[in-house]
Amino acid sequence: MEKRRRLALHWKIVIGLVLGVIVGIAIDRLWTGQTWAAIGVNDPRAFMAGRGNETFASGVASEANAEAGFVAGAVRFIVNANTLIGQLFFRSLRFIAVPIVICSLTIGVASLGDLKRLGRIGGKTVGFFVFTTAISIAVGLTIADIASPGERIDPAARAEMTAKYQSNVEASRGRTSEVPSFWQQGLDLVPPNPFQALATAQMLQVIVAAMALGAALTMIPSSKSGPVIAIFDALTDAIVMLVNTIMRLAPIAVFTLVAPAIVIMGLDVLKAVGVYCVVVIVGLATIMLIVYPLVLRLVAGVGFVRFFRALSPAMLTAFSSSSSNATLPVTISCAINRLGVSERIASFACPLGATINMAGTAMYQGVATVFIAQMYGMDLTIGQLAVIVLTATLAGIGTPGIPGAGVVMLVIVLESVGVPPDGIAVILGVDRLLDMCRTVVNVTGDAAAAAVVAKTEGELLSETEVEKRLAEGRLPD
Ligand code: ASP
Image 1 (cartoon, helix red, strand yellow):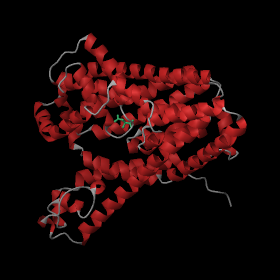
Image 2 (cartoon, helix red, strand yellow):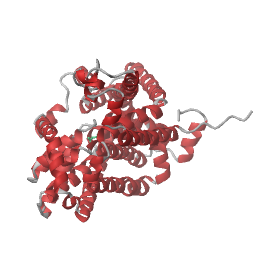
Image 3 (tube, protein in one colour):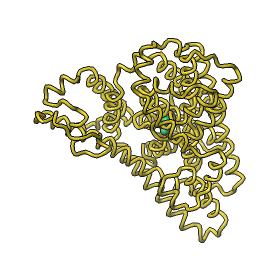
Image 4 (cartoon, helix red, strand yellow):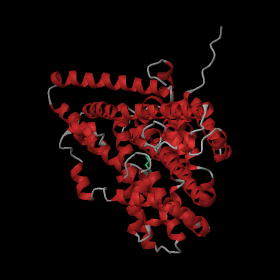
């Protein structure tokens, strides 16, 4: 009997994503306060909190829900089960992020052989990140200037959003005071205790520790370093195997993450700031569809379709998780197994990118700054625009690859040009949606850097070689 062709993983994830969007929109539109009342729930927040914990909602038990019956209980069960699956997936990827960096990067550096080469690869990678980030911000500022989204905002909607999200703005402002100074960040590169860096997932410190260990391994006799390298090598393979296993859950997990994100955001909020969202999304799409493909084609000779096909699982995971860090294991695995980047370059460029390359976030911060300035009727000078490019590039580098971090760092960009941070209230409602989109661009940039650097180092397989290896089953797909 002829074997039925299995649907490729990325298509299954796309189906999960589309269903998540449809279900999210349907619930947002159809499930109202009356629906809750009809099933005996008059205080949905308190009811959903139930005996839950912070992950599953917060609130207090309420007398108003005394009538809640079986249907209401079933709804709460489904919502909690949904949250559980999504969070399990998210945690499993985060659980893998630190081990994969320490193992694969140590091996990568140890196998480079000489430190000069490491310096060269590091320089190229960081150069790629800074160059593409600055271009991305310039693209975003140009589109925002042409479309003027801030001038189209309805004053009533602005007042409503400001009242609704003011307390969140205060929270974001408070968190920026936790951002360490430039000098402190330089000092923090070296962890005083590497185990603490591992335990608290300080990615930049983990990268430094792995590089130091890898470099030191090259300096001792191979009779001693050999067994350590072999262990790390086997561990890397085992971890990649774990990633592939976890990714089987991705189609369902993507559904469980995306549907509630839409319900929580609510579509009404889009009406007020729709033009702003369109500007950010067009800017992000320009980077994804023009800037990266151009650089990939010109420098690495990698075509658009090949790159997107190879990276699609990572892009879809980035979209649903809104976290470059959580997506990191998938990015590394796709770069090596599906794109043909050598292990040592992928394990260097991708973690570094997940930590410092936030081209999508920086572009979003640029557009948001122009939007808020326009909303307050402020005209930004060329000098101020240049300051935005500079501070957004730096703020992007300092933004951790976790959900919602970009909006906290946005406060710094706004303050750098004297735009009132209170304006953030107007865009907070749509931040999750834009976070999902910008994280895709951030992750794409990490893999693009890996491909470009690998090509210039002669460490990128051709498409035919990748297909051959996949067909031979030497690499998991
Ligand atoms: N969520 C983004 C990331 O992980 C960062 C941000 O823009 O909030 O790449």
